[in-house]
Amino acid sequence: MEQCLLEKYRDFLPVTPQTPLITIGEANTPLVRSQTLERELGCGELYFKLEGCNPTGSFKDRGMVVAVAKAVEAQTPAIICASTGNTSASAAAYGAACGLDVFVVVPKGNIAMGKLAQALAYGAKILTIDDNFDKALELVLILAQKLPVALVNSLNPHRIEGQKTAAFEIVDALGSAPDYLFIPVGNAGNITAYWKGFKHYKQAGKNDNTPKMMGFEAEGAAAIVRDKVITDPKTVASAIRIGNPASWKGAVAAKDESGGMIDCVSDEEILSAYKLLACKEGIFGEPASAASVAGLIKLRASGQDFSAKKVVCVITGTGLKDPDTTIQTTKTPAELPADLDILEKEILKSS
Ligand SMILES: *Cc1c(COP(=O)(O)O)cnc(C)c1O
Image (cartoon, rainbow, N blue to C red):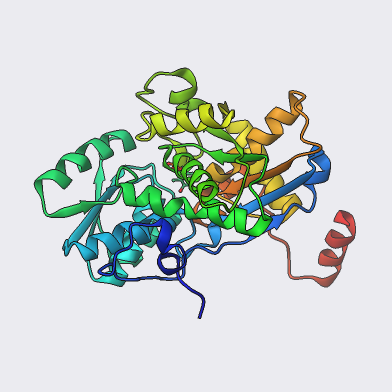
C-alpha cells in the first residue's frame, strides 16, 4: 500500500507518535504535461497539478487530513469551519471518517450544488447564514473559542502545513522546482502553503531553486490587488469569492520573497480558461481553478515570454462540483427524434 500523506511527509509535518495516521486517499495527485496550451502559449514546459483528484475533489483534503488528525489527537469531539463549499466538503469527509461531529457555516445561495451535496452526504450539520463567506468566518472564529470544537479553516496552522505537501510533490515529480507557479487566490492559504513548501524542501536540500509565485484573484474579489477589503465580493468562481483573505500577509510575502505577483482576472477570462482547459486539455476544473490558467493566458497576451520556462498551473478542484456553471455557460443540445437518418446527418454536419 502507498504511504499516506501523514506518513510520507511526517518529517515536515506536526506528526507526533500520538498523531493518528488517518487517510481517505488524499494527495499524490497527478502532475500532467499540457497537450495543447503549452504549444499555443509558447511555454517551454507547461504542467497542471490536478488537485481535483483528491478524495473530495479539491486540494482542501491535504490540509484537512492534518487538521483533523490533530483534532483527534487532542481528543476534540467536534470540528467547525466557514466555507464557500470545498472546505466544508473536506471537513465533513474527514470528520465522518474519524467519528467527529462536523459543523459547517456556509453563505446562503452562494455554494455550488456538488459541494453542498457532499457535505450533506457525509452527514455534516450545515448552518446556512444570510450573509457572505467573510461573515461566516468571523462568526466561526468566535464559536471555536466559546465551544469545544476545533476550527479547521486555514487559520488553523495545521491546514497550511498539510497543503504545503503539494509543493513537495511537484519538486519530487520534476526533480526541481518550476520557474513559475500559477495559482488561484481566495482566502490565500494555498499560495502561502505552497511557498512554505518550496522553501522547506529547499532547506532540506531537495530543490535548489524556488518558483516565482503567481497568484490570481477574481477581479470582483481582488482585495489583495486593490489593497482593501471588498465588502461585497462578486465572481462566478465561488471558491475564491472572498473579500477579506485570512492569509493576506502570507500571500504578499510569497509574492515579494519569490519575485512573483498577485494580479486578478475577470470572470470572462476565468470562464474562457475554464472552457479551454476542458476542450483542449481534457481537464475539467471548477471555475476558481481556471484562474491560474487565466492568469498565464493574460500574462502571455501582455507579451511575457515563457519560452524557456517550466510553468506549473495548479488546478485546485474538479469541475463536477459546479455543474450549474457549465450548463449555464455552454449551449445545451436540442432534443432529436430517435431516427437513424437524422442522427447520421447531425454527425456528418458537425464533423
Ligand atoms: C479553497 C479553494 C481555492 C482558494 O484557495 P485559498 O487557499 O482560499 O486561496 C481555489 N480553488 C478551489 C477549488 C478551492 O477549493
